[in-house]
Amino acid sequence: MKNFERKANKHAISERHLVCQEQFQLLEENIIDHALSKERRLAVIKYNKQVSINRRILARLIHVVCYLGKQELAFRGHDERKSSSNKGNYLELLELLSQEEQIFKEHFLSNSLFKGTFILLSCSSLDKYSALLRLMPSMLSCKM
Image (cartoon, rainbow, N blue to C red; front, side, top):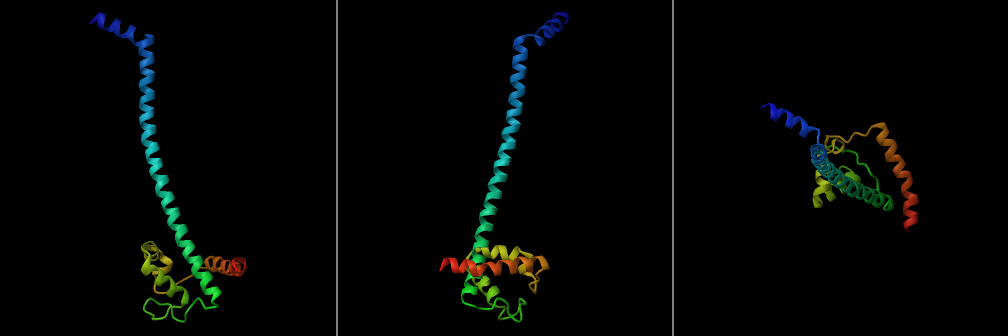
């Protein structure tokens, strides 16, 4: 046993052991970094997919707003309850689009703004909506 302890101590301070120990620690870090980077990659892929979906939905919403503005049609109806047969041009057009596009349908089913019995817009939402509407004429004239 005396020889074993002496040789183990001698080996522990040897250059070969120190190099191997350093390589092992680097390998351990690389494995952890690789696992983390894999998780990061998956998170980035998921995020980019959601951004792509959001852009598609926003593009459709802008097309609907442009269409209604170009046709000089009213956006809102008198009765926007879920049970109403005529919720207004904007909501009816969005419902029509959601029948054809699954992404659109999922968005409107999960979005609290569209799934209530009434469409409730906060003041900040109305301000953003109004700002978007004010921009539409200049955007339409640029396209024509």
